[in-house]
Each structure stands twice: as C-alpha cells, then as structure tokens.
Length: 348
Ligand code: NAP
Ligand code: ZN
Ligand code: ZN
Image 1 (cartoon, rainbow, N blue to C red):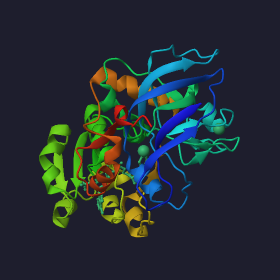
Image 2 (image 1 turned 60 degrees about the horizontal axis):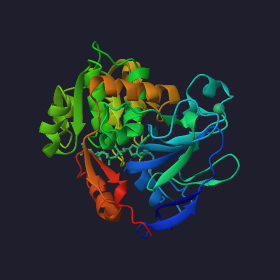
Image 3 (image 1 turned 45 degrees about the vertical axis):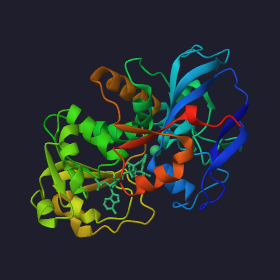
Image 4 (image 1 turned 180 degrees about the vertical axis):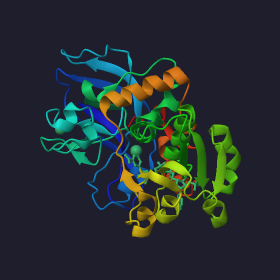
C-alpha cells in the first residue's frame, strides 16, 4: 500500500517528505487514515540516534489517531469510518506468558515497535508522521467520540506510559505521589495521579510551570533548582514517577521515598543514571522502570479518559514545522505536547 510521510535519513538532517510502501492489509488488519500524531520525546531521541539503535529512513510517530478506511475480512472491532488509535507497538508473539497475561510490551520474543523497528518477517516499519498506517486490529484501539481527537493522540504514549505504572503500584486516595518533570509524560502522570485521588507533589526545574502544575492537579509544587525545597519532602512519598528525558540526579528523588516506597523511571535519557546504593538501602526503597502498557490496559486507559474527561494539553503544529517543534520540546517550551495536524502533509 502506498504511503506518504516525513522521514529522517540520518541523525543530523531535518525530516523530509518521503514516499514509501506499507504491507497490503491482510484479513486481521485495519487501515487507519491518520488525522493527528503526537510528538513524543522518544521520536527525538530516535531521530537523533541518542539510544544508538536507529534505523534510517525513519518515519517517527507513535501517538496516532484517525479513521478506519479499510477493514480486513476477519476484523471484529472496527468498521469503515470508525475512529481508531495506534500507539507504541504493533506486534508481539501473542503466545508467551507475558503476551497471554496482557503485558505485551514485555513479550519474551520482543515486542515490535511502531517505527524504528522490524516486524518478525524483517519488514522495516514506519510510524505515524504519515497519511496512513496498516495495523492488526489487536494493536489498534477504539476511541470514544467524547474525546477530542487531537488532544487524545498523546494518550497513546504519554498517557499509557504514566497510567500503567500508577495503576501497577496501586496509586489511590491513600497515597502520596511525586511526579518528576512536567513535560508530555509528566503532565499526564500528574492528571492521572490527581484523578486517582492521590496527594500529588509535582517536581519541576521550571519555576514558570508552577501555576500550570497546580491547575493540572498538583497539591504541591517543588521547583527543583532549590535543593532545600526537595529535602523538605525526604522520606515522605509512597511512589515517585520520574518522567525526565535528560540526565539528572536520581538519588535526590529516591530520597523522597518512605519505607518500601518505589521510584519508577519512565524517562529514557541517553546516558545511564548513577544510583547510590545508600539511596535505595535507606528505607528499603525500590527502583523500577515501566514500558508503555498492555493492549487491554491501553484500551481501558482510553475509556477511563473518556469517562473522566481527561485528555492531553496540546499545541497543534504542522508537519513543515518539525525542526522548530523538536527544538521547543528539548527546551521544555511546550504546554505540554505538540500534535501534528496531518492535514498539513503536502500532497506530493
Ligand atoms: P518532554 O515532553 O521533553 O518532557 C521531559 C521533561 O523533563 C521536561 O519538560 C522537563 O520538565 C524535564 N527535564 C528536561 N531536561 C531536564 C534536566 N536536564 N533535568 C531535569 N529535568 C529535566 O519528554 P516526554 O515526551 O515527556 O518524554 C520523557 C522521557 O520519557 C523521554 O526520555 C522519553 O523517551 C521517555 N519515554 C518513555 C516511555 C516508556 O515506555 N517508558 C514512553 C514514552 C517516552 P520540567 O521543565 O518540569 O523540569
Ligand atoms: Zn512515546
Ligand atoms: Zn509474547
């Protein structure tokens, strides 16, 4: 099937218009005409080869929403014209214990990413900065008409990546939670933790985000360029969700945890973080990580958002403004997620 998108061809040059082929839809596939695609910091890490695993040409994008234009003969969940969404993964073995348990990101055969990845048959996969995508319906989600489409796009990565660990570590009314970094992921983590009833402390390096953090649901805001303000909270939190994209002192945030508390890092800086054994030994703390969420859980999260009126705070941009958008994400100068309006894709 013919597709048109924007691709990176190496780690330095700007993305350019790119024609490419996707597989023709099979019996279990749907074709989604993409209306909007979010810009995740992972797109930037991979376009710039900051994780050292980039495959070019690369069409990034894994926060995808649109409408179904074609359904395979065995498709059950969708009809032509339905809204649909696609996230960070598009295949897994579906037979291993983790797939069967509904935690497909941890597939023992290796989950298949939406882009910068090869499918099990070796096909190079392209993401959502494009006019369409072909995907097995198991990896596509239904989207309630209650959700604004552009503002729902970031739920497919930023949303599920923060919702899943908050649920796994049972965040609720009795818990005190810290969210570190108020970016795309962080602002969703803050909204979800607040919605789940926790007492939420937002940690940010940006004093200018203080008022926004309160509006988004923070009970307290700590500007982390002020170390005494952090230490005031030492040993007082049950759970910390670290959503920071760059190297930082994780020990300062581990120190916030009370007995048996957990810090879950969802941020993926390009350099390793140095962990002091003293920071985890004190209070028998745990350091963990979490990757997106399972397919059923992602659908559950989207339904939860529709029920509770939760979407991302987005700034719409056009596909020709990617360089500017990337620079602004890196500066933390977006409130709080860029979403590409795919109607701006040139019809070359
Ligand atoms: P983002 O929108 O750029 O947000 C990152 C935030 O981190 C910034 O807004 C800033 O918040 C804070 N920050 C940036 N540089 C910092 C520094 N040097 N020291 C301290 N704080 C800093 O990025 P995102 O899209 O939310 O993604 C965040 C990270 O999660 C990325 O590394 C991304 O690759 C990763 N990720 C992981 C998964 C997963 O499955 N685990 C999924 C998606 C993304 P303040 O201004 O508030 O300080
Ligand atoms: Zn992402
Ligand atoms: Zn599997």
